[in-house]
Length: 112
Length: 118
Image (cartoon, rainbow over all chains, first blue to last red):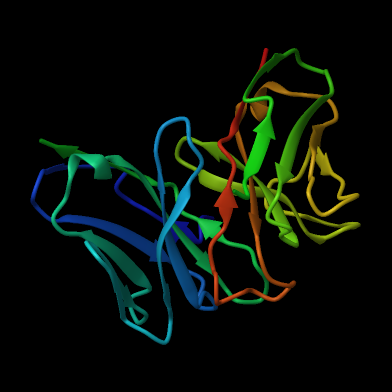
């Protein structure tokens, strides 16, 4: 059973609009969450993270929101740019080690 | 610049053959990981290591093995390749000790090795 789920395999957004990528988790021991971006033929790269002691973290156009009671997090990209087109992975850790559990990924397409 | 490299980038092999995927990092990171990426499953952990001579099984370790004889390298071996092991394999590394490093948090990934088992 997948502990981290990204229920939308793909998302298409117009340039300049907001992109919202969602992630749900089931393990209540997860306390640190990360988003990775992956371009074709490249490895994933770290984008942004959030600890469970926070409910929001911003980095430029990227903001991650965490709702612990709902076991849900989301990544907002504002404004979306064509260069943001990639696969986005949500990941979670329970803090017991350095391992991350990944979701299945969401392919974002930003149309010019 | 420090980096993490994987080889080969593409490999086609036959069922039953032994295959080794190499991973080399120059960050001097203690922690190294092997993941496989499959459609619908995202990234799944195969094996990981927290330091020299340390290896551990991940979520999907059956049919795979690793060894850690130095800090820089974590080769992944498929003892007898199966068609179900056709996938893209990513090596990753991170700083910190065996305890999760909240200061960095992230993993640094290689560019991936695409393996096809016929």
